[in-house]
Image (cartoon, rainbow over all chains, first blue to last red; front, side, top):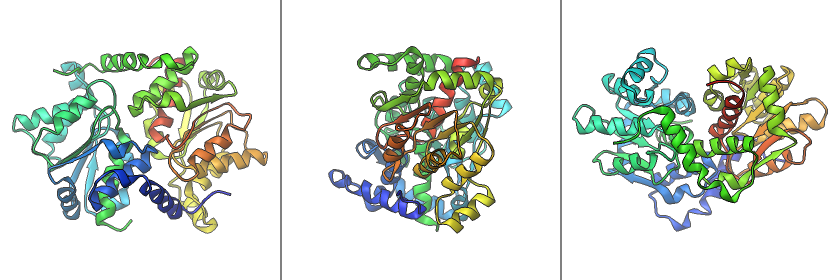
Amino acid sequence: MYEKKPMKIENKSMDIIDTVMGDVNFSEDELLVVKRMIHTTGDFEYRKIIEFQNNFIKIAKEAFKNGVSLYTDTKMAYQGINKPALEKSNSTVRFFIDDEDVREKAKEKETTRSACAIEKAVDKGIEGFVIGNAPTALFRLLELVQEGKANPKFIIGVPVGFVGAAESKELLRTFDIPGISTIGTKGGSNVAASIVNALLYMVVDR
Amino acid sequence: MYEKKPMKIENKSMDIIDTVMGDVNFSEDELLVVKRMIHTTGDFEYRKIIEFQNNFIKIAKEAFKNGVSLYTDTKMAYQGINKPALEKSNSTVRFFIDDEDVREKAKEKETTRSACAIEKAVDKGIEGFVIGNAPTALFRLLELVQEGKANPKFIIGVPVGFVGAAESKELLRTFDIPGISTIGTKGGSNVAASIVNALLYMVVDR
């Protein structure tokens, strides 16, 4: 027989994750985020590669308490965010990766749709950025910050992969912006969404 | 400066992944699947934990050549599948996790929506199963196979987590069904989608 009750499964899972957290040092709130990232990937190594910066949890929790506009770089990250919880927090989430104007701009400028979609998100006044896939999205966002054109409340920066992902996250960690990122190649849309959900579950009932 | 051309990024990424594949033994087609799973997670360890069974690649490629009906256990996995490529292969993908009848049945039977959604998928005659999240979905599917009520063409079984995920995949590997799974806790909706996409890119132009 196998466990079939949803909340029992999740609680048991979190208890199992707890057993390996003895060798790392996180605050109680940080731990909730880290554990959900591990829950989502099945990968204990995450506990060693997650970096919080500039009071991320406090700022992000405040933002979710007041309602915040989010942007995700992929539809998968969008999909992974718990919408009923998001609504309870009066927050919103959008993505622009498939928009026709973004496609055209990317072709014209010979860059990724991810980078062009970030420009659109900045134009639209998005407050919180959730980047789980494309290093070019994070790089472009940081360029816009550098140029004084973007001023994110926080950045969830966990792009994945072998070309620029690690570097883009390293760059994020040099900025004076509330954020969370991973060291190295690991990340992903599912990881990005899990961070948002962990924050939501701190401020609203599920 | 960072690389901005999408296909260049992907090709470079695949080249980097190639450099670590010397210590494993996969067929050329298998390698395409394994590499895409690594590409999606940023996690080289996948090369050591992926198991193919019962001629999976050959059977799945044939299915995608002829058009196949797929089911995903989550919307995230659904979202991660390349739809233009899927359409070119005359295949379809559905999910039932949010359906009202599935919700009601799960409450009534005190089990997960994932398990009830699998029952619905089997009723609907789905041919290929893509399970990236819920061990209970994979367990339930295998029960239905055991009872002679389901006869999947193939199973992509990469549920993630610490409660039943490893066991459900171990069980899959005892069945005489074309399949792919991971050993241990790792997996995910993104991983499941990456397997489908790798197969699609073998049979259609992107």
